[in-house]
Length: 328
Image (cartoon, rainbow, N blue to C red; front, side):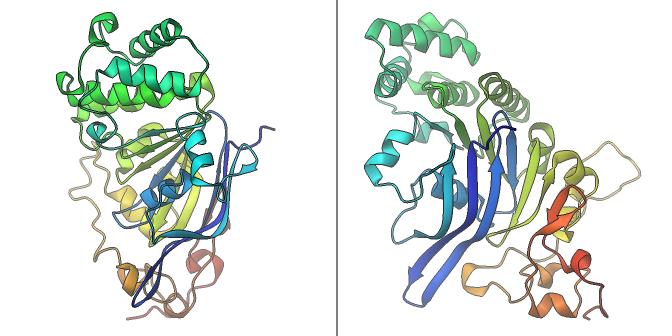
């Protein structure tokens, strides 16, 4: 049995404020195995991106990891110094962000940026690093890499820039790729190409992928397992087929119901009433209960924990306790 590339246990991220301490990520736990894509999905404010930011050690002060453990290939990384995490980022953990222009320096040719990344993490000569940069550009689908290696980021389309960012992320053969909304700014047809490319390249290398997105359609096409986040917690996690075909948590059912299909029997998509609660106003009990059509008395006063249900785990009293009279 392979050991997980990434193991997250009871991760807690807090932000001290003058009005008190706000908990943005609250007890999140999951593993990602070699070659596996874990899709992390939820609305804006669910804590998805902050979980990824905590893993790569880039939480801005006064934010802090207040509890839990992060392990990369079995070794803890949550207590490392800033300098030690810098050595891990890029070499052992690759990153692909939403806007490729934030990852590329507009003043440098893409070849220079690739070669600098390669030589920073791998012991190669300048000529060998250039050959590797050309190979990476070719692998991610950049046409005529011998010519395009001399171009600046502005000379590429959005989809091509994201391919360059993917090449940068893979430059040092990382064990883990964290992709935070990597296709949001792209056309739908280009989204499919980038997602397929990310999946193929990481499978070939045996790298684990944490794919963060709000788009259940992207998750359905890409992930092996799915973690659904709401108000800083995982409310459901399980195999893709189970979560998409037989969702358990009412919030997951709403997200899955929002995926357009070619089924003409469904006139309208599912709508989840209300909005994600602010960190200053997370309800007691189950945080989703003000928006839930299946809410009953226990949901309002007691918070459910993740417990096994079939091949998945779900945090919902509908599965852990017989429903009492519904709350009106």
